[in-house]
Length: 164
Image (cartoon, rainbow, N blue to C red):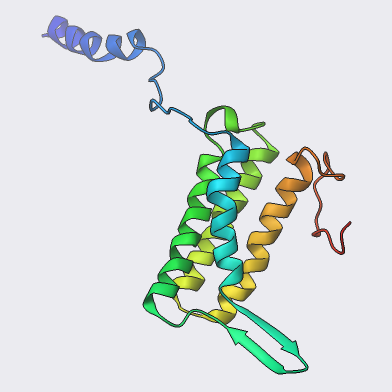
């Protein structure tokens, strides 16, 4: 009986050590970070930012926000795209490092999740407010990683203003 128990333990344990580390999913990255930003992230952010606003002029006050199911769905879908784009930025060679890049990608995920919550609540004020959260997540990352940025190399706690 003891030999049978030993044999069962060996049969169960040996394969765990023989296989080594399991391989991750077979991702095939087809675009780089710039292409991801231009084709996926920027358009989604623009939908969110452009969905709610107020302009006060001599002619009066012009306010806009989603009113139809289709308009709210567009804001919701863009929030989901932003949220999942944070994950896309962490995959493979897109990740510039395992520290700040990952933290900022997670901030994009969190900002997208807040945008999704605002869109699902159909609250124009919440969508407007979360636009700032999304902007800060983008701006902090751009300040450290965007190649042509004059502030490259440092993480800003406040956004750029007035063309700085």
